[in-house]
Image: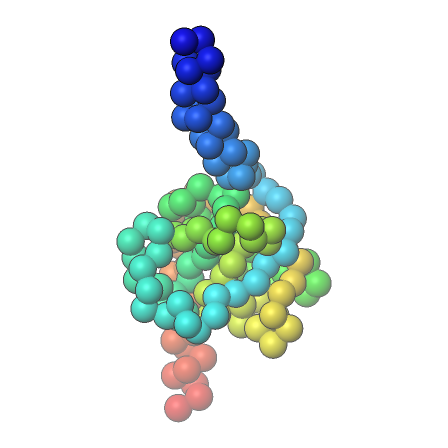
Length: 146
């Protein structure tokens, strides 16, 4: 009977521990590798239920709490972008963050595919303000191109 209880306990406890270990959250900042979403994910639902759009400042991460706003800095050139984390990556993915294409272009690594970044969790206010500013700059650039 003890063995049955122990086996039952372990069966339900161990998977939860593995999930917790796999999702160690960053609280302030961390350095790692960034990549960006493939076009095949366009229009698919994210973990939060949003529809993925490569033209929105969003990201996926297994280490950052869903709904968090983050400031991502490309270590090689100092470029910065703000994004909201609304998705998870594949469980075995070792990268820190997977960005929408628009963010990868702003960080100037879209052609390269990956880059080393510093990711900092910011307040919702700073994140929303940063994303809005990026959109305004993009609109101005496109307006000047016409």
